[in-house]
Image (cartoon, rainbow, N blue to C red; front, side, top):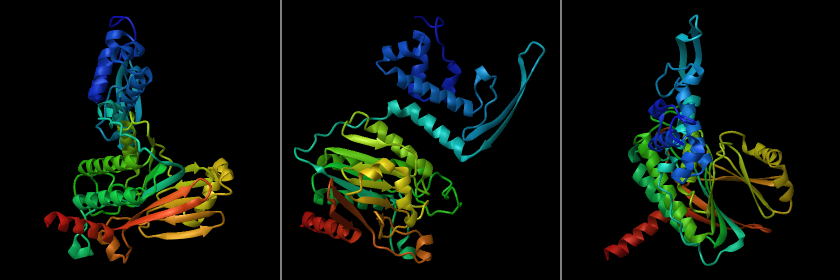
Amino acid sequence: MAAGEGFVVDPQLKTWAENRQREYIDAINEYGSISAAARAMGLHTANVSRSIHGLKARAAAAGYSPEHDMTRTVPEGFTVRGVSTYYDRDGKAAGQWVKSSADAEARERLMLARIEGFKDELPTARAIEAPTFADDDLLTIYPQGDPHAGLASWKDETGAHFDLVEFERINRAAIDRLVASAPPSATALFNDKGDSTHADDNSNRTRKSGHELDVIGRHSEVVRVVIRLKRYQVARLLEKHRKVIIRIDPGNHDSQTALFLALIQEAHYQNEPRVEVITSPNPYWYMGFGANLIGTCHGDGAKGKDLPLLMAVDAPQLWAASESGERLFIAGHVHHKDQKDYPGVTVEYVRTLAAPDYYSHHAGYRSKRSMDAITLHKADGIVERQTCSLGRINRLQAAVADVMGA
């Protein structure tokens, strides 16, 4: 079907489109429908339709939706709060007043629309050969406590140096050590506990409290390092485990970036059947494994004593199925280890490998820095635990350096 004989997408939408979306617009207008364009491009119709829908939403948020007589646009980062259109005697729009404001919801909608736009442009991971042996009765959880990429810590001021290079060094070393020492579980759950990035944008302040943050690097630079690290971590897990589940808990420092990172991971591993990425924005997430029930959250919401009841209310079927097993709720946020048994549930707050910033150090917060791997049996609950401390990382790397220099 030639262009103009069927469905047509407004070419003006290219103003808000990513490169791939511009190709979609041209193909739809050439072939006359979304389905025909998708067939010609070798794509699923739903993917093209969803991308165009997201593009229209992004344009509408900026004030452009001609079918609704909206043609007065607002700057990126703002959202249209109200449109008043007045018409002439012939019913044609003669003028328009547009009310706009900048807010977190607008930024989040723009972020999601942009992700839909460049998903197809992202490189996808190559499949990694599965291990020859793995125990189907075992699950190993790798909870990465509050990574805080981008946090700046000056050793003279806090007693510890921390920047993007140090962040990547210690987190790569930790996953290397834990994967090497963990049992060959068939399934691995990689659980980023939230606050993957120390800041959520270039304002370098927490969204809720406006607390000023010690940050090194621009936010885009920090996100690039985090994505590179996560690809390394998942690659190591795929060498040891047949299936890898990725869950990134939204934190109080990175509530929007966390969702962005999850969607990027989903796009990157779309051709790797052994990886499942959880993209739910719900701050509480649950997973059943045999007779066990695992809950995850960042830890800045409900208090530890309230998490068992939340688990029972939020996941009643999994709760009933886990009566004879282990119920484990894993949280972060506080940066120190705290484990307490409540009736029917163990709540565990995990440590972080990140150094303290000046605020935390000045407030008197002190904790050991480490990362754990926790292994559960389908029927027996927790059966093994490995710990990799910062001291262990430094000693192992120093020993390797000595050998290489000898």
